[in-house]
Image (cartoon, rainbow, N blue to C red; front, side, top):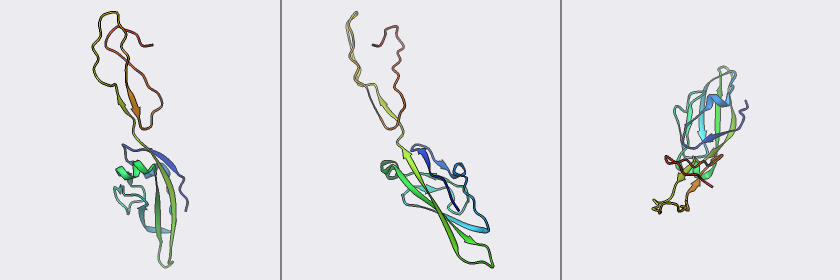
Length: 129
């Protein structure tokens, strides 16, 4: 049994069908986590794992699937995947500013979490530089 590692955004659950777990000759299985998040159903082959705040802060969890052999065979087999968890992006435009006509405003925005780019927009006709 093997399951590839993957990446998830922390503000959404991770559907384990994305990892395509494969189990053969077993009907009973159970998921466990090294973190404190939750599974939609620990006994389903492809549940959704929802990371906890601690999982997101930690940046990764190990999810393990354990399968019990079909009768008359005995024993168990396990496979794990590392789920890397990116923090959701955050953005702050900073405080309100009042300026005089013809003056420039110094913006004091900030971003956090995982993001690819930053884009300022305005409802006015001014320009950003």
